[in-house]
Length: 437
Ligand code: SF4
Ligand code: SF4
Image 1 (cartoon, protein in one colour):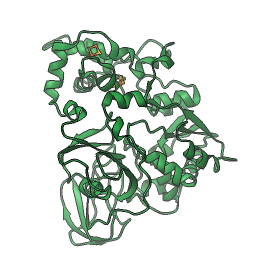
Image 2 (image 1 turned 30 degrees about the vertical axis):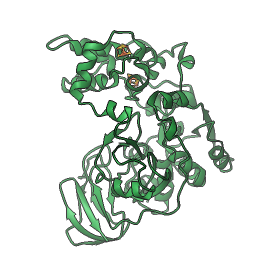
Image 3 (image 1 turned 90 degrees about the vertical axis):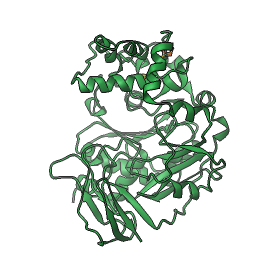
Image 4 (image 1 turned 180 degrees about the vertical axis):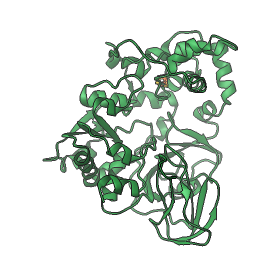
Protein backbone atom coordinates (compact mmCIF):
# COMPACT_ATOMS: atom_id res chain seq x y z
CA UNK A 1 0.00 0.00 0.00
CA UNK A 2 1.42 3.43 -0.90
CA UNK A 3 1.61 6.20 1.67
CA UNK A 4 -1.22 8.00 -0.13
CA UNK A 5 -3.45 4.92 0.14
CA UNK A 6 -2.56 4.56 3.81
CA UNK A 7 -3.42 8.22 4.49
CA UNK A 8 -6.76 7.79 2.71
CA UNK A 9 -7.52 4.51 4.47
CA UNK A 10 -6.74 6.14 7.82
CA UNK A 11 -9.26 8.92 7.16
CA UNK A 12 -6.81 11.77 7.73
CA UNK A 13 -8.10 15.30 7.18
CA UNK A 14 -6.56 18.68 8.05
CA UNK A 15 -6.48 18.61 11.84
CA UNK A 16 -5.92 22.34 12.26
CA UNK A 17 -9.55 23.12 11.47
CA UNK A 18 -9.55 23.00 7.66
CA UNK A 19 -10.61 19.37 7.32
CA UNK A 20 -9.30 18.96 3.79
CA UNK A 21 -8.61 15.27 2.98
CA UNK A 22 -4.85 14.84 3.45
CA UNK A 23 -4.38 12.12 0.81
CA UNK A 24 -5.31 14.60 -1.93
CA UNK A 25 -2.57 17.02 -0.88
CA UNK A 26 -0.03 14.19 -0.56
CA UNK A 27 -0.58 13.22 -4.22
CA UNK A 28 0.96 16.49 -5.44
CA UNK A 29 4.52 16.93 -6.65
CA UNK A 30 5.97 19.96 -4.87
CA UNK A 31 9.21 21.63 -3.81
CA UNK A 32 8.38 22.36 -0.20
CA UNK A 33 6.48 20.72 2.64
CA UNK A 34 5.48 23.11 5.40
CA UNK A 35 4.30 22.13 8.87
CA UNK A 36 2.11 24.70 10.57
CA UNK A 37 2.86 24.79 14.27
CA UNK A 38 2.16 28.52 14.61
CA UNK A 39 -0.91 28.06 16.80
CA UNK A 40 -1.99 31.65 17.16
CA UNK A 41 -5.55 31.34 18.52
CA UNK A 42 -5.42 32.90 22.01
CA UNK A 43 -5.49 30.41 24.95
CA UNK A 44 -5.15 27.27 22.78
CA UNK A 45 -1.82 25.48 23.28
CA UNK A 46 -2.36 21.96 22.02
CA UNK A 47 0.06 22.17 19.07
CA UNK A 48 2.79 23.27 21.46
CA UNK A 49 2.08 20.24 23.65
CA UNK A 50 1.95 17.90 20.67
CA UNK A 51 5.32 19.15 19.33
CA UNK A 52 6.84 18.94 22.79
CA UNK A 53 5.69 15.39 23.51
CA UNK A 54 5.64 13.86 20.02
CA UNK A 55 8.48 15.53 18.05
CA UNK A 56 9.62 12.29 16.37
CA UNK A 57 6.12 11.66 15.03
CA UNK A 58 5.69 15.22 13.70
CA UNK A 59 9.09 15.23 11.96
CA UNK A 60 8.60 11.62 10.80
CA UNK A 61 5.24 12.49 9.22
CA UNK A 62 6.80 15.45 7.42
CA UNK A 63 9.61 13.30 6.08
CA UNK A 64 7.15 10.71 4.77
CA UNK A 65 5.21 13.40 2.88
CA UNK A 66 8.45 14.92 1.56
CA UNK A 67 9.41 11.53 0.14
CA UNK A 68 5.94 10.97 -1.36
CA UNK A 69 5.73 14.41 -2.99
CA UNK A 70 9.38 14.66 -4.06
CA UNK A 71 9.90 17.78 -1.92
CA UNK A 72 13.56 18.49 -1.26
CA UNK A 73 12.94 20.80 1.62
CA UNK A 74 10.65 21.00 4.61
CA UNK A 75 9.87 23.95 6.86
CA UNK A 76 8.48 23.72 10.35
CA UNK A 77 6.83 26.94 11.53
CA UNK A 78 6.98 27.37 15.31
CA UNK A 79 6.81 30.46 17.47
CA UNK A 80 10.05 31.58 19.16
CA UNK A 81 8.25 31.64 22.52
CA UNK A 82 7.79 27.85 22.32
CA UNK A 83 11.47 27.19 23.13
CA UNK A 84 10.92 23.74 24.65
CA UNK A 85 9.08 22.52 21.57
CA UNK A 86 11.82 23.91 19.31
CA UNK A 87 14.49 22.08 21.33
CA UNK A 88 12.48 18.85 21.21
CA UNK A 89 11.96 19.04 17.44
CA UNK A 90 15.52 20.09 16.61
CA UNK A 91 16.89 16.77 17.83
CA UNK A 92 15.10 15.01 14.97
CA UNK A 93 15.96 17.42 12.15
CA UNK A 94 19.57 16.55 11.18
CA UNK A 95 19.66 14.79 7.80
CA UNK A 96 15.97 15.33 7.05
CA UNK A 97 16.15 18.48 4.89
CA UNK A 98 13.74 20.14 7.33
CA UNK A 99 14.46 23.59 8.72
CA UNK A 100 12.72 25.52 11.48
CA UNK A 101 10.95 28.78 10.61
CA UNK A 102 10.87 30.79 13.80
CA UNK A 103 7.82 33.00 14.10
CA UNK A 104 7.03 35.96 16.33
CA UNK A 105 4.13 35.82 18.78
CA UNK A 106 1.69 37.58 16.49
CA UNK A 107 -1.84 37.00 15.23
CA UNK A 108 -2.35 35.49 12.67
CA UNK A 109 1.05 33.85 12.09
CA UNK A 110 -0.52 30.59 10.94
CA UNK A 111 -2.51 31.82 7.93
CA UNK A 112 -1.32 29.64 5.03
CA UNK A 113 -0.60 32.67 2.82
CA UNK A 114 1.48 34.22 5.60
CA UNK A 115 3.33 31.03 6.48
CA UNK A 116 4.20 30.20 2.87
CA UNK A 117 5.54 33.74 2.44
CA UNK A 118 7.59 33.59 5.65
CA UNK A 119 9.03 30.17 4.85
CA UNK A 120 9.71 30.50 1.13
CA UNK A 121 9.38 34.20 0.25
CA UNK A 122 6.68 33.21 -2.26
CA UNK A 123 3.27 34.84 -2.47
CA UNK A 124 0.34 32.59 -3.29
CA UNK A 125 -1.59 34.03 -6.26
CA UNK A 126 -4.88 35.70 -5.28
CA UNK A 127 -7.52 33.04 -4.47
CA UNK A 128 -4.86 30.38 -5.04
CA UNK A 129 -3.58 27.58 -2.84
CA UNK A 130 -0.05 26.75 -1.60
CA UNK A 131 0.27 24.17 -4.40
CA UNK A 132 0.33 27.06 -6.91
CA UNK A 133 3.74 28.05 -5.54
CA UNK A 134 5.09 24.53 -5.05
CA UNK A 135 4.07 24.00 -1.43
CA UNK A 136 1.95 21.65 0.64
CA UNK A 137 1.01 22.96 4.09
CA UNK A 138 -0.40 20.82 6.89
CA UNK A 139 -0.98 21.37 10.58
CA UNK A 140 1.56 19.56 12.82
CA UNK A 141 -1.15 17.20 14.10
CA UNK A 142 -1.91 16.14 10.53
CA UNK A 143 1.74 15.09 10.16
CA UNK A 144 1.46 13.23 13.48
CA UNK A 145 -1.57 11.38 12.05
CA UNK A 146 0.30 10.60 8.82
CA UNK A 147 3.13 9.08 10.83
CA UNK A 148 0.60 6.89 12.66
CA UNK A 149 -1.19 5.96 9.41
CA UNK A 150 2.09 4.68 7.95
CA UNK A 151 2.08 2.26 10.90
CA UNK A 152 -1.50 1.18 10.25
CA UNK A 153 -3.44 3.39 12.69
CA UNK A 154 -6.59 5.21 11.59
CA UNK A 155 -7.73 8.55 13.00
CA UNK A 156 -9.82 7.58 16.00
CA UNK A 157 -8.58 10.18 18.48
CA UNK A 158 -8.30 13.94 18.42
CA UNK A 159 -5.77 16.00 20.32
CA UNK A 160 -7.60 18.88 22.00
CA UNK A 161 -6.97 21.71 24.42
CA UNK A 162 -9.63 22.70 26.94
CA UNK A 163 -9.04 26.14 28.43
CA UNK A 164 -10.67 29.29 29.76
CA UNK A 165 -13.02 29.10 32.75
CA UNK A 166 -12.17 25.48 33.62
CA UNK A 167 -10.44 24.20 36.75
CA UNK A 168 -7.61 22.37 34.98
CA UNK A 169 -6.69 23.79 31.58
CA UNK A 170 -5.10 20.86 29.74
CA UNK A 171 -4.35 19.14 26.43
CA UNK A 172 -5.16 15.48 25.81
CA UNK A 173 -6.29 12.89 23.28
CA UNK A 174 -9.96 12.08 23.18
CA UNK A 175 -12.01 9.59 21.14
CA UNK A 176 -13.64 11.28 18.13
CA UNK A 177 -17.34 11.66 18.99
CA UNK A 178 -16.86 12.49 22.69
CA UNK A 179 -19.27 15.14 24.00
CA UNK A 180 -18.12 18.58 25.10
CA UNK A 181 -19.66 17.78 28.49
CA UNK A 182 -17.18 14.92 28.96
CA UNK A 183 -14.26 17.05 27.76
CA UNK A 184 -15.04 19.82 30.20
CA UNK A 185 -15.53 17.35 33.06
CA UNK A 186 -12.12 15.85 32.23
CA UNK A 187 -10.64 19.35 32.53
CA UNK A 188 -11.93 19.53 36.09
CA UNK A 189 -15.27 21.18 35.29
CA UNK A 190 -16.02 24.86 34.90
CA UNK A 191 -15.32 27.65 37.36
CA UNK A 192 -18.62 29.37 36.54
CA UNK A 193 -22.22 28.16 36.35
CA UNK A 194 -23.36 29.94 33.19
CA UNK A 195 -20.99 29.76 30.28
CA UNK A 196 -20.54 29.67 26.53
CA UNK A 197 -18.11 27.38 24.71
CA UNK A 198 -15.94 28.60 21.85
CA UNK A 199 -15.15 25.68 19.54
CA UNK A 200 -11.74 25.90 17.87
CA UNK A 201 -10.81 29.35 19.15
CA UNK A 202 -11.98 32.82 20.07
CA UNK A 203 -10.98 34.42 16.77
CA UNK A 204 -12.04 31.91 14.13
CA UNK A 205 -14.13 29.44 16.09
CA UNK A 206 -17.86 29.24 16.70
CA UNK A 207 -19.86 29.66 19.89
CA UNK A 208 -22.18 27.05 21.37
CA UNK A 209 -24.07 26.53 24.60
CA UNK A 210 -24.77 22.87 23.82
CA UNK A 211 -22.77 20.44 25.96
CA UNK A 212 -23.96 17.51 23.85
CA UNK A 213 -22.07 18.65 20.77
CA UNK A 214 -19.19 16.33 19.96
CA UNK A 215 -15.53 16.34 18.98
CA UNK A 216 -14.74 15.86 15.31
CA UNK A 217 -11.43 15.35 13.50
CA UNK A 218 -11.05 19.13 13.24
CA UNK A 219 -11.88 20.21 16.81
CA UNK A 220 -8.68 21.82 18.06
CA UNK A 221 -10.04 22.86 21.41
CA UNK A 222 -12.74 24.35 23.58
CA UNK A 223 -12.56 27.65 25.39
CA UNK A 224 -15.10 28.14 28.13
CA UNK A 225 -16.02 31.71 29.03
CA UNK A 226 -18.66 33.07 31.43
CA UNK A 227 -21.95 33.79 29.70
CA UNK A 228 -21.71 37.48 30.61
CA UNK A 229 -18.20 37.81 29.14
CA UNK A 230 -17.70 40.55 26.55
CA UNK A 231 -16.82 38.01 23.82
CA UNK A 232 -19.85 35.79 24.38
CA UNK A 233 -22.06 38.86 24.04
CA UNK A 234 -20.22 39.98 20.89
CA UNK A 235 -20.45 36.60 19.23
CA UNK A 236 -23.98 35.80 20.32
CA UNK A 237 -25.71 38.64 18.45
CA UNK A 238 -27.91 37.54 15.57
CA UNK A 239 -26.38 37.73 12.09
CA UNK A 240 -29.08 40.21 11.14
CA UNK A 241 -28.21 42.56 14.00
CA UNK A 242 -24.48 42.36 13.34
CA UNK A 243 -25.00 43.67 9.83
CA UNK A 244 -27.68 46.17 10.85
CA UNK A 245 -25.41 47.77 13.44
CA UNK A 246 -22.64 48.03 10.86
CA UNK A 247 -24.93 49.68 8.37
CA UNK A 248 -25.87 52.46 10.76
CA UNK A 249 -22.62 52.98 12.69
CA UNK A 250 -19.62 52.45 10.38
CA UNK A 251 -17.85 55.78 9.92
CA UNK A 252 -15.46 54.45 7.25
CA UNK A 253 -12.38 55.11 9.38
CA UNK A 254 -10.77 52.16 7.51
CA UNK A 255 -8.82 50.84 10.53
CA UNK A 256 -10.21 47.40 9.68
CA UNK A 257 -8.48 47.52 6.31
CA UNK A 258 -5.29 49.16 7.57
CA UNK A 259 -4.78 46.30 10.07
CA UNK A 260 -5.99 43.47 7.83
CA UNK A 261 -3.18 40.88 7.49
CA UNK A 262 -4.25 39.85 3.99
CA UNK A 263 -4.37 43.50 2.85
CA UNK A 264 -0.90 44.07 4.33
CA UNK A 265 0.39 41.02 2.49
CA UNK A 266 -0.69 42.62 -0.80
CA UNK A 267 -4.13 41.13 -1.44
CA UNK A 268 -7.08 43.31 -2.34
CA UNK A 269 -9.10 42.75 0.83
CA UNK A 270 -10.69 45.98 2.04
CA UNK A 271 -13.28 45.35 4.75
CA UNK A 272 -14.15 49.04 5.11
CA UNK A 273 -15.34 48.97 1.49
CA UNK A 274 -17.22 45.73 2.16
CA UNK A 275 -19.04 47.58 4.96
CA UNK A 276 -20.44 49.94 2.30
CA UNK A 277 -22.32 46.99 0.80
CA UNK A 278 -24.54 46.97 3.91
CA UNK A 279 -26.13 50.26 2.86
CA UNK A 280 -27.58 48.84 -0.35
CA UNK A 281 -30.84 46.96 -0.44
CA UNK A 282 -31.44 46.47 -4.16
CA UNK A 283 -28.64 46.99 -6.73
CA UNK A 284 -25.10 48.21 -6.09
CA UNK A 285 -23.86 45.76 -3.46
CA UNK A 286 -21.80 43.74 -5.91
CA UNK A 287 -19.29 46.56 -6.37
CA UNK A 288 -18.38 46.46 -2.68
CA UNK A 289 -18.78 42.71 -2.13
CA UNK A 290 -15.72 41.92 -4.23
CA UNK A 291 -13.33 43.39 -1.66
CA UNK A 292 -14.22 40.41 0.56
CA UNK A 293 -13.22 37.67 -1.86
CA UNK A 294 -9.68 37.17 -0.51
CA UNK A 295 -10.53 37.54 3.19
CA UNK A 296 -9.29 34.55 5.24
CA UNK A 297 -11.86 35.11 8.03
CA UNK A 298 -9.14 35.63 10.66
CA UNK A 299 -11.53 37.86 12.62
CA UNK A 300 -8.95 40.54 13.41
CA UNK A 301 -11.04 43.37 11.95
CA UNK A 302 -14.09 42.50 14.05
CA UNK A 303 -12.38 41.57 17.30
CA UNK A 304 -9.35 43.85 17.33
CA UNK A 305 -9.20 46.65 14.76
CA UNK A 306 -12.65 48.21 14.69
CA UNK A 307 -12.83 50.96 17.33
CA UNK A 308 -16.64 50.81 17.25
CA UNK A 309 -16.97 47.06 17.89
CA UNK A 310 -18.66 46.49 14.53
CA UNK A 311 -18.54 43.29 12.49
CA UNK A 312 -16.51 43.76 9.28
CA UNK A 313 -15.49 40.08 9.22
CA UNK A 314 -19.14 39.05 9.30
CA UNK A 315 -19.86 41.59 6.53
CA UNK A 316 -17.13 39.86 4.50
CA UNK A 317 -18.69 36.44 5.22
CA UNK A 318 -22.01 37.82 4.00
CA UNK A 319 -20.49 39.31 0.85
CA UNK A 320 -18.66 36.08 0.04
CA UNK A 321 -21.92 34.20 0.37
CA UNK A 322 -23.69 36.63 -1.95
CA UNK A 323 -20.92 36.35 -4.55
CA UNK A 324 -21.12 32.57 -4.33
CA UNK A 325 -24.90 32.63 -4.86
CA UNK A 326 -24.43 34.92 -7.85
CA UNK A 327 -21.71 32.61 -9.19
CA UNK A 328 -19.32 35.56 -9.27
CA UNK A 329 -15.62 35.30 -8.52
CA UNK A 330 -13.53 38.43 -8.08
CA UNK A 331 -10.14 38.33 -9.74
CA UNK A 332 -7.39 40.58 -8.42
CA UNK A 333 -5.67 42.09 -11.43
CA UNK A 334 -3.04 44.20 -9.73
CA UNK A 335 0.15 42.41 -8.69
CA UNK A 336 0.46 41.12 -5.13
CA UNK A 337 2.89 43.43 -3.37
CA UNK A 338 3.67 43.33 0.33
CA UNK A 339 2.75 46.60 2.05
CA UNK A 340 5.89 48.43 3.31
CA UNK A 341 4.31 48.95 6.75
CA UNK A 342 3.34 45.27 7.19
CA UNK A 343 5.85 44.43 9.93
CA UNK A 344 4.96 47.59 11.85
CA UNK A 345 1.30 46.58 12.00
CA UNK A 346 1.75 43.15 13.53
CA UNK A 347 -0.68 42.34 16.34
CA UNK A 348 1.08 40.82 19.38
CA UNK A 349 -0.87 38.03 21.07
CA UNK A 350 -0.49 39.79 24.42
CA UNK A 351 -2.19 42.87 23.01
CA UNK A 352 -4.89 40.75 21.40
CA UNK A 353 -5.65 38.94 24.68
CA UNK A 354 -5.97 42.34 26.35
CA UNK A 355 -8.40 43.56 23.69
CA UNK A 356 -10.43 40.34 24.01
CA UNK A 357 -10.44 40.68 27.81
CA UNK A 358 -9.08 37.17 28.33
CA UNK A 359 -5.63 37.88 29.88
CA UNK A 360 -6.72 36.22 33.13
CA UNK A 361 -7.41 32.95 31.32
CA UNK A 362 -4.00 32.66 29.67
CA UNK A 363 -2.22 29.70 31.23
CA UNK A 364 -0.24 26.56 30.55
CA UNK A 365 -2.44 23.67 29.30
CA UNK A 366 -0.19 20.65 29.97
CA UNK A 367 -0.46 17.34 28.16
CA UNK A 368 -2.28 14.64 30.11
CA UNK A 369 -1.56 11.05 29.16
CA UNK A 370 -4.91 9.83 30.42
CA UNK A 371 -8.03 10.05 28.25
CA UNK A 372 -11.68 10.58 29.18
CA UNK A 373 -13.36 7.19 29.66
CA UNK A 374 -16.44 7.48 27.50
CA UNK A 375 -19.30 4.98 27.38
CA UNK A 376 -20.54 6.01 23.95
CA UNK A 377 -19.53 8.21 21.03
CA UNK A 378 -21.52 10.05 18.39
CA UNK A 379 -19.41 10.05 15.24
CA UNK A 380 -20.40 12.68 12.68
CA UNK A 381 -20.51 11.59 9.03
CA UNK A 382 -19.26 14.95 7.81
CA UNK A 383 -16.12 16.07 9.59
CA UNK A 384 -14.24 17.23 6.52
CA UNK A 385 -14.27 19.14 3.25
CA UNK A 386 -16.27 17.25 0.62
CA UNK A 387 -19.29 15.00 0.74
CA UNK A 388 -20.73 13.30 3.80
CA UNK A 389 -19.49 9.73 4.34
CA UNK A 390 -22.03 6.92 3.90
CA UNK A 391 -22.48 4.31 6.67
CA UNK A 392 -21.25 0.80 5.88
CA UNK A 393 -22.31 -0.76 9.22
CA UNK A 394 -25.72 -1.84 10.46
CA UNK A 395 -27.50 -1.53 13.78
CA UNK A 396 -26.14 -3.99 16.33
CA UNK A 397 -22.83 -4.59 14.54
CA UNK A 398 -19.86 -5.09 16.84
CA UNK A 399 -16.94 -2.78 16.11
CA UNK A 400 -13.47 -2.18 17.47
CA UNK A 401 -11.54 1.06 17.72
CA UNK A 402 -10.33 1.58 14.14
CA UNK A 403 -13.11 -0.37 12.37
CA UNK A 404 -14.21 1.41 9.19
CA UNK A 405 -17.84 2.51 9.68
CA UNK A 406 -18.46 4.97 6.83
CA UNK A 407 -16.85 6.03 3.58
CA UNK A 408 -17.41 8.51 0.78
CA UNK A 409 -19.46 7.57 -2.27
CA UNK A 410 -17.38 6.28 -5.20
CA UNK A 411 -15.45 9.09 -6.90
CA UNK A 412 -16.51 11.78 -4.38
CA UNK A 413 -14.16 13.94 -2.34
CA UNK A 414 -14.42 12.99 1.32
CA UNK A 415 -12.94 10.94 4.09
CA UNK A 416 -13.15 7.47 5.62
CA UNK A 417 -14.63 7.36 9.13
CA UNK A 418 -13.71 4.80 11.79
CA UNK A 419 -15.10 3.76 15.13
CA UNK A 420 -13.25 5.51 17.94
CA UNK A 421 -14.08 2.93 20.64
CA UNK A 422 -14.85 -0.79 20.96
CA UNK A 423 -18.59 -1.41 21.15
CA UNK A 424 -21.83 -1.91 19.24
CA UNK A 425 -23.55 0.32 16.71
CA UNK A 426 -26.60 1.57 18.61
CA UNK A 427 -27.92 4.27 16.29
CA UNK A 428 -27.51 5.26 12.65
CA UNK A 429 -28.93 8.66 11.79
CA UNK A 430 -28.76 10.94 8.77
CA UNK A 431 -25.69 12.74 10.11
CA UNK A 432 -24.04 10.42 12.61
CA UNK A 433 -23.43 6.92 13.89
CA UNK A 434 -23.63 6.20 17.60
CA UNK A 435 -21.47 3.51 19.16
CA UNK A 436 -21.85 2.31 22.74
CA UNK A 437 -19.51 0.11 24.73
S1 SF4 B 1 -12.92 49.90 11.50
FE1 SF4 B 1 -15.10 49.73 11.99
S2 SF4 B 1 -15.89 51.83 11.83
FE2 SF4 B 1 -13.87 51.80 10.81
S3 SF4 B 1 -14.35 51.37 8.65
FE3 SF4 B 1 -13.97 49.41 9.60
S4 SF4 B 1 -15.98 48.67 10.24
FE4 SF4 B 1 -16.19 50.87 9.83
S1 SF4 C 1 -11.38 38.76 8.75
FE1 SF4 C 1 -11.01 40.95 8.51
S2 SF4 C 1 -8.87 41.23 9.06
FE2 SF4 C 1 -9.15 39.04 8.64
S3 SF4 C 1 -8.65 38.77 6.49
FE3 SF4 C 1 -10.86 39.13 6.60
S4 SF4 C 1 -11.08 41.30 6.31
FE4 SF4 C 1 -8.95 40.96 6.84
